[in-house]
Length: 490
Image 1 (cartoon, rainbow, N blue to C red):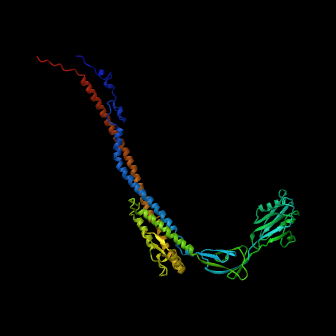
Image 2 (cartoon, helix red, strand yellow; image 1 turned 90 degrees about the vertical axis):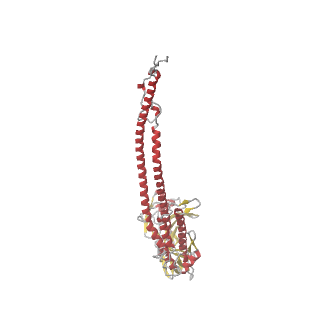
Image 3 (cartoon, helix red, strand yellow; image 1 turned 180 degrees about the vertical axis):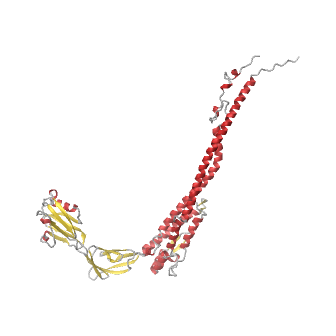
């Protein structure tokens, strides 16, 4: 009987042509024996199954810490904002604020700074301070007419400057422009006026006061500019007409007379500035009234109440629970938050030794608590308290144990670099860094696990592929064995 060779079964190839599975290969397509194991997919699934729960735990913890750090920043910002409202009330000088009023604004206006003496004062104004103004005679037919060249020296008060007039600016217009642009000019303005009779030169001072008079001299040996010179006591006094006399303001406050080169008076009454605008009639003085500026204080107290209500809203969002959304604030149950909140409330609701049994708490001056923890201010009650016992209200907020003083101290301590907020922040930052390190270590562990599993399953893949090839060879070999010839029955 003929037999079939192995070559004919395998299509002409010998078993030595079969390639084993490569360890480096991650695809079963490379296995000569057929698909065995997809190493890459298997390792990826095993690593993912091991990594996922640990990674989820770290991620959740990191998110929680990050949320708390953000909430802490919100708290810190809210406290700083609230503290800024205390600066207008936490010191006695904050209540030492005055306002000044004039009974006749056509005579003077007034402002007062801290420390100005409260009271009413009679003010008379006999003369206002004036700046000098000189008008020359007719100097030319027009501003463009030539005057001449030379050197002028002008002075205003004790300051003088020199103007050189050359051929490029020898007209009246040119001379005026040269004066106005001259270096060292203390405040003289030259203006050319064209009238029916010809052109005039107007010299005006920007400085008021009797000492600030104008003089003009010709300092060269020529005489072309002689018509421009002026001295009130000189032979050239007729060259100009005095349109406005240089003079000091003459006034009195509470019967004390004084003069000033300016109409702005800052030294007549400590802390008060007077701006003189007119004169008073004989025996009819105007009245300056300096009083405590309660309107500003009321505004500052109102700002404090508003700022606290905003802070309460922040406390609620951080540590409260929203039943409509079933959402808890990021600092709900935080000892830090509740501690700060309790300290602030204790200061707000405390009784302060103000020297008055009537005005010794916020409630007594019109600040009361609402059911939601916010505050309300009764402006009329506060105004009455300020009018009745100003010093007690001042002590209530700014005294050594005052509400604003205590609050400022508490918040300063909480926000300090070694305070409770900074300490909590450092702890949370350390936790965040630790979680980051754990995540990095997990990634390294998973990389090592992936490499190990890849090596193991690649080796297994090679073995299985080899066995598959051997099995195929044996199957093929057995199929080609000759049949056993048996003896037929007789």
